[in-house]
Image (tube, rainbow, N blue to C red):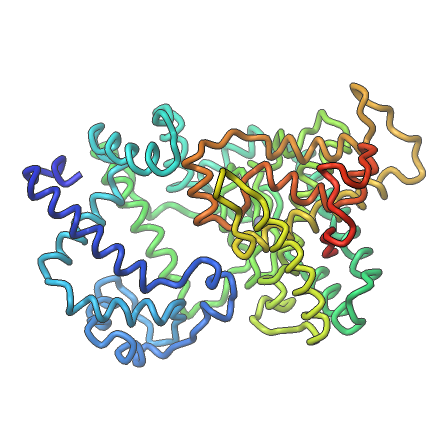
Length: 472
Ligand SMILES: [Zn+2]
């Protein structure tokens, strides 16, 4: 990359080593992923004046002035130890090396929007080496992706007009309601939870803000300048727009209508500090949700995804936030203990999954997402069964009963091919398990699955009763 930017090969090689050495030192001062999952570990409310004590050799005043931060309020220093480590390096590493490092940061952050040689060199490492991808995505897909990242709510308006009808929205709203009802029923009857915690859990569930499809009010991009002069110039404008938008929030009331994902995004989230569940129109499409498919397939797909996001409000991390989104413990000590021992079952199960010879899932990293899957499937299955009550039983389709199709719906969502490099990256960095264990893990815990497919104890997809995990 340095060569492409004009350095001679020997200098480029030496500079690459400098960058790697600085990255390694900064990584050593960073909090491991598993520790970052505990919200208390990344919450350190700090007075701006006290930053000097944390990293005295960093010129905070000039930095804040240059990024246009005009506030003297408190800030959250997510990782204080990182700043201590950074401070040591600030004086230990020569200034010339820092300049090399910053030059690299600029090149690396913009390589994908520079000329072809940079794009290919960037792909060679971030695509080919890290994920095992064999070829760059076609140009039109990269263009759609960058438009979505820069102008997501402008693109989103066109997207929902085309692909998310009012009828589709109404059905999705109903599905979310049915899932909330199912989880409420479950919380009311859960044997291991005390009444005090149960009441608070139910209150938290009722307080969920539900965002479905697209925002009620669209983001205004009027101040974002886009022209035909340069692609990278437009990308820089988009970053600047976003930074100003974020800085503009400081000292103003929280905007609870804001969306953290664009409408075309094929994903969903639970945001603990807002206590909200959010489902962009992009995930309310096949294979997650198919208006042409029968209920069982859809409950096993999007239904379980909705249940998954709701379950995040009560997983080992989300459970630390109350109904208003404040970081306050609302569990009784005994209930927290029971919850933790149940979570430990999931940790142990996933740590036992071998992704490749000698490479296992890290149960402590994926526990929250795996609780989400198990809880989500349990709620969605209950919601499906409830929706079938008092009606004639739906016919089998292609020889599969509704109960079987429910689990097929979930399996279809996660049926994906992953290259070995991508799997290694996932296991090391991603709190989600690889696709196949998101299916094998929860289904082998569920008696409903064994029943639907007439599996017996001792079968591969049936965990022995003493090892069977159950949260909700
Ligand atoms: Zn999740």
